[in-house]
Amino acid sequence: MIPDVGLNCQRRPKTVGVAFEKVEHDNVAVLKVSGNLDTSTAKQLKKALADMIQEERYNIVVDLQKVAQINYMGVGTLLERLRQVRKFDGDLRLAGLNKLTRKCLSMVGASKVFAVFVNEDEAVASFAPTQEDARAVAVHAQ
Image (cartoon, rainbow, N blue to C red; front, side, top):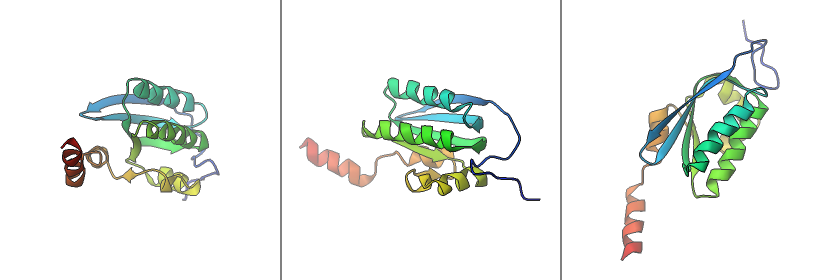
C-alpha cells in the first residue's frame, strides 16, 4: 500500500516531536535531527540552527537521516538559515534524506538550492578545501 502523502509531504496521522544532537567537526557543525519537521517543530529547528550561527558556525550539515517527515515550515526554516549562513560565506548542506523528505524538497524546488549528500560523512567532507582552494590561498598570501 502506498502511504498517504499530502501536499505537506507528511504521512498521516502521526504526531512525533523532534530531537537534535549537535556534533562538531573541524570547521563543520552537524545538526542531527530525529522526528518530524513540521509546523509544531519548526521553531525548535530555527532556534537550534540560530544557536549554531550565533556561535559563528557557518558551515553546517543538517543530517535528516532520522527525520520521518517534513512539511513546508521545515523546508522554509532550512531555506531561511541557508540564506543567513551564506551572508557569512558559509553553507548549509543536507544529508541522509529518505524518499519522502527528498520528494518534498523536490516538490518545492529546494532540492535545486541545497547541496544534498547521501550521508553525514560525505556532507562534512564536501567542506574540505580543494587543492585549487589551497593554491589560491597560497598565491594570495604571497
